[in-house]
Image (tube, rainbow, N blue to C red; front, side):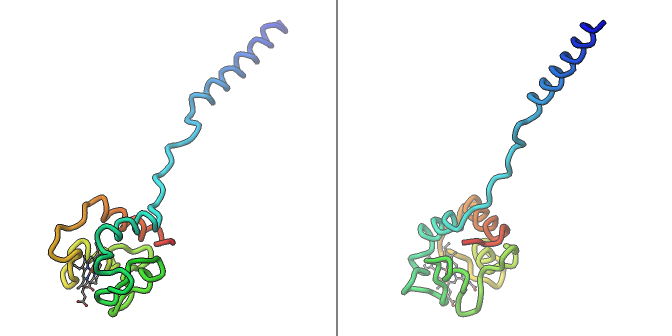
Length: 126
Ligand code: HEC
């Protein structure tokens, strides 16, 4: 009788352990939000020729985080948390009334534009 009891307890304990080990140890982590360095790399390849330091067309300098957040002659181009309302994204997507960027060139890839959108959505952090 005592043996049966011990066995049952041991079996239950094993069953619990078994259950635990089949449960996912780590639920699939959400992909991390892009960092400014990811966005900076896109600007470096596509934008700095016209928006880098000395040469800041429209007053827009995309060569540093501070400068990007400052915006241009017409004000800020990034609205934290709101990519759709950010002139930066509107220019990349070609929204009416906003000059499409880069000018006279193919639009950036969907992957690049979403990297910028997701960075803004996550709060446009440095
Ligand atoms: C060939 C030069 C050139 C390149 C390359 C370029 N821009 Fe521009 N950008 C301009 C000019 C010129 C203006 C408009 C200035 C004005 O009319 O006041 C402008 C304006 C803008 C504006 C403001 C648009 C508006 O209507 O308010 C944004 C945002 C912008 N650029 C972002 C970018 C981004 C991001 C890139 C890279 C993907 C880029 N630009 C690449 C020349 C360029």
